[in-house]
Length: 177
Image 1: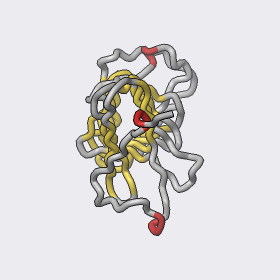
Image 2: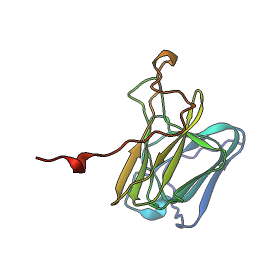
Image 3: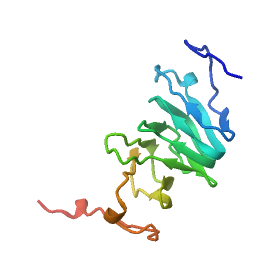
Image 4: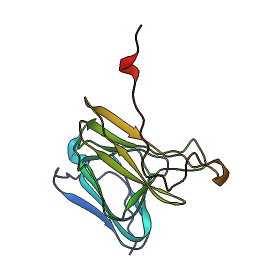
């Protein structure tokens, strides 16, 4: 059945509640205009799409604890998704992944992890060639991690998908003025 769901809903989500997007049809994930009201934010958001995807249609999609990518693709559709969990389990992927890249460079959705501390964060990004896992291991501090992928033509690939690890050293502390 089809439902006309216009207007504002009066609801509250517990920090430990799970909202699951499940099924074989494309589904829309909405955000909230009131980003300061935590009861309007997802506690745990689970994507479990055996075919097709779940797609963001609005910004301000905020998750308090964890994003579960059980199966299928979470399509950011040019919008950002924010996870406030700030732990090594704030993104958990079984076979699911996140589609961030678009060939139109103005529409790149970002995965934002707030309170990123000294733990490993892994984000599985869906690409035309498969899944590329972004792995972030900070050495100190905490703050915000913001990551997106950008699509490119096949003859302009920066590195083959077979490369499983890329290490970038921060030598900024070794500079002498």
